[in-house]
Length: 296
Image (cartoon, rainbow, N blue to C red; front, side, top):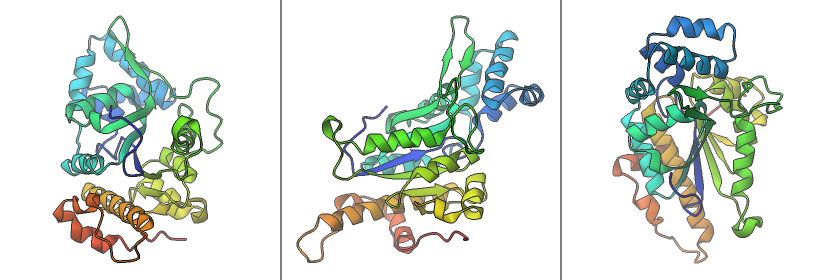
């Protein structure tokens, strides 16, 4: 994992399923190992997190190995545009994190395979470990007595909003735990129902990037728009994700540069902005002045 702290003042927090990869990792593994019908049956009786743990137990009992699970994950679809966005944002000085309701084994297998694990300073997700018998165990992020969040969009095993509150608290602290003069901006990228709660924890200085046509977009667009204080920038596909994310980063860097410039004259763009790929320059020029319209 990459070191946290410092950087350019921007922290990008990614969901994993249908955001970094273009599938649900649990369903991908279950389908790849031929257990779709059994998993569907488990879901009729158990919460999702408990069902995927039980599914791993059944697969282990019939002789399937964790290496087979990992091999299936290495084939999960991850767009080169996502990899480019991650690597470029990291190169520009952003701190990158994952906040996911998948699990540590699945997330790690994918990021390691694509050489992206070192770009992220932290991964907050459901714990997972291989026990002494070689069986993959998947546990809830928030164990008993639960997370206590009243939002129906948060599953019982994980409230991403609670995690986002902790992240923001961490970013609000300076050296030695004293309050920072100015906390770093957060950009949150997600798609699902569980991504709504953390979006509500962001402030006017932050950004949320909901995937258009997916549950979090519907919740933001169709709900109380005033409840989401962050600047909303939609994305539909992975080309959008790259362009919108790097556009936000460029906007933040330019804003920080302007705030720090006391000369009153026209200053050169910050070096980080000049380092952005040339193919994105025209995209940024087109999108930076605009906030994405979300229906009231």
